[in-house]
Image 1 (tube, helix red, strand yellow):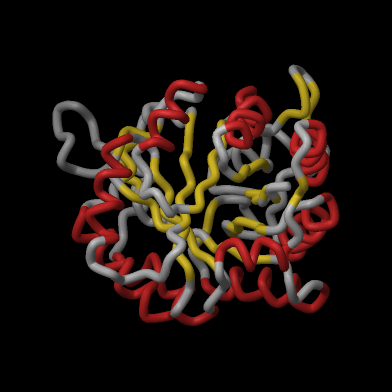
Image 2: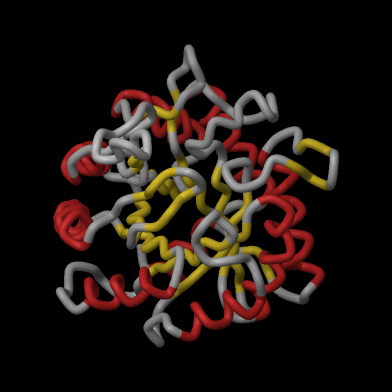
Length: 290
């Protein structure tokens, strides 16, 4: 029976800490949510960090390090996946002067986006592929930026999770893989429902899945109300799954999720009820060859 890996994205970088008080902010809270998600069935925890005082997204290496250390003091097998996404946002200025970036722009160098990966060396790190409109902003990952980040990640031995948001991102990723920077199996995450990238739908997921390299290991997720339906769809198509408060704040319409663990439990129930088995961290390591 095929084993399905659950990733839990525990906090994210969106400004939604005021929308759901369960979204973890401090390193201690983030680490605790990771550990609770693991107990509920997640084999991988995907981690952003936040300023402990403001709750705003942060790129501080010491915050990442504290989260990882707190997790490893309790569990040395759960697979840790650190983000490299922060540092890619552009907020354009007024229409009369759009070349002057507005408040909220975080754009920084490829080196700054991966320095915590080089120093902490998690099991996995995300590598966002391609640029697109992200809500009212622009999420910028130029080919040169992605290639430089990929080379630095490759030098660490950390396995990249190639996050793709549309068909163009998959095309760019396949071109990158021709440079032989990474070990097989390649790991892809199909990210659906983010405005204004690919929609969350069975048709879109199938189309994107069919464009992946034949030997890729892949997962997919939908955001908000589409999170759990996309769990089932990904399993049907042969993929793995992702849930968590980064992508969805609710258990049901009008019912806030009290933490990440209940979302993981929902995903695990879907997997089990479909006749599959939830992968342990050790089994996930075997699947991913890490």
